Length: 299
Image 1: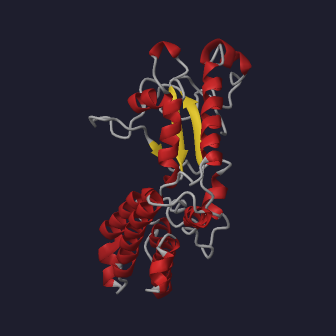
Image 2: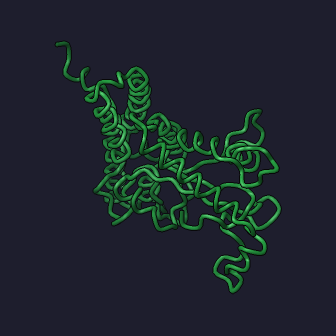
Image 3: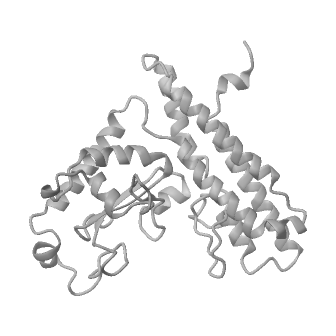
């Protein structure tokens, strides 16, 4: 937590995709700081900051953490799973910022907190309870509560945006997305199979447990491409593109290399290299969670 309590309305959260479910489960166990509501943090979060406000069953918004904060290099450079929380103000009626309006002003002091934001420190206590519940679940779980399938929607969305925004230009340069499309499919299929094996695991077999836990940890790091030029931004899915003129939601390295348009043959060669690098990285992530026994063949 960078700023744990910047308001008293609802949670603002971000995490690595594989941690979505364990975070939702933890927030269901911690009461909302407003005891008069008789609800959990999850319930008020789903009501006040849903992913889809028009859905019949609302789910809290939980995206990749914003990139302009201190802990992000752990995720973007080495692939460490991340989660972050803050209580924020009501952004529907006031300043639409995740951070509190008095941030870095002369009014940003303990008096503001004690008089207006959290007079009895119930929000602080709720954040401490939530953090403790998450740490307990992660530390005590025999099988890590990660779900590698949660990367699938991001992969599909990045691929779709790449095809829609750049597909025709890449095709005109004989740069094919077929292998990238196959790698995304392979990952999604591998993640489904891995989840099935996780559900069927013999928890009394320490070798099976260690094997699956190792794969769960490593798949988060498998999306790191160490050859990316920026010294911190190595994640092929969530690194910022660094392009101020193109707001495409495609894979960030492709957006970066297509920024302002490749102007010569060398520029298109770099685009080709990035497509190949992203493809190989996603396929390596699929390989991490593939069934090793199936690779060895029949015994």
